[in-house]
Length: 123
Image (tube, rainbow, N blue to C red; front, top):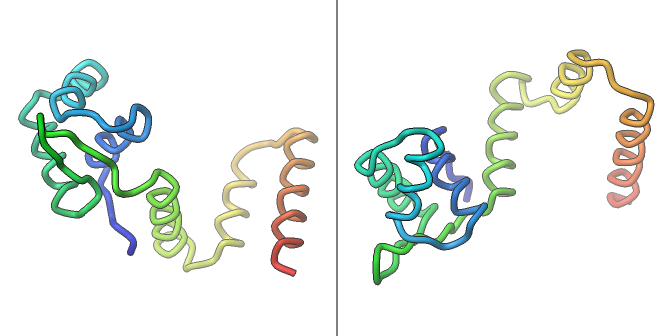
């Protein structure tokens, strides 16, 4: 099941993805340092993530565990981006991405190899 996480929720999840299980207080301390959030803001966002079943809260000490992996969140966000902005077309997304920046010969070769590898795995 895809869970839509908003930017603020992704900030909390990023801490858990980077550091693993930790208390809400530890998350709050990190986000206070990194982005200036106060404790109430962090706890409110954590509770929203718990309600969405993206975080599991356990005791003691309001310990938080990510139930959604970073890869799952990336997949959900990518699918939404493709659907919203590119009419569901991966081709249009790639055209837009590749048209925005000059790629080096090495980068182009890496992309070709990736496409070839993905195509071979579907055979």
